Length: 112
Image 1 (cartoon, rainbow, N blue to C red):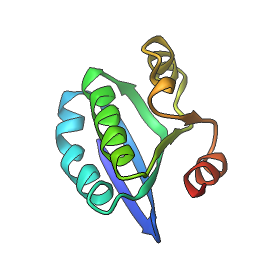
Image 2 (image 1 turned 90 degrees about the horizontal axis):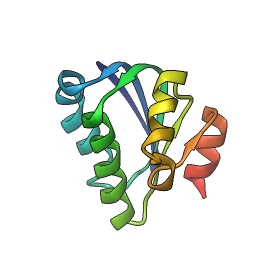
Image 3 (image 1 turned 60 degrees about the vertical axis):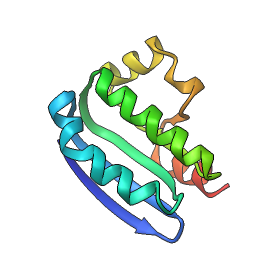
Image 4 (image 1 turned 60 degrees about the horizontal axis):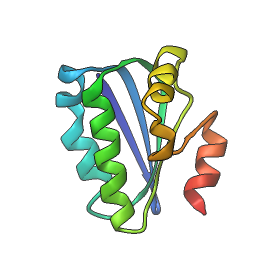
């Protein structure tokens, strides 16, 4: 799992590549969390190159989203691949973390 972070003003743009399984989450979670939570940054997460998500990945997204919400910030996920999207649909992740089709929509959501 690879993570790329771009901080612009109060918005963090996160790009993930690889598998969000236990080893993948272990590699990126602390860097992801420390780059967005302390400053309460609105966060958009690019999932175009995430090929798999396990329960640890779901836990990471839910945990970060809840921490951001406590600071009046939000996280939005965008462009998940079909297999990842199916997992999100099965566990009703949209009820906790918004999931949109593309980066432009995610940026609009994060900026409001």
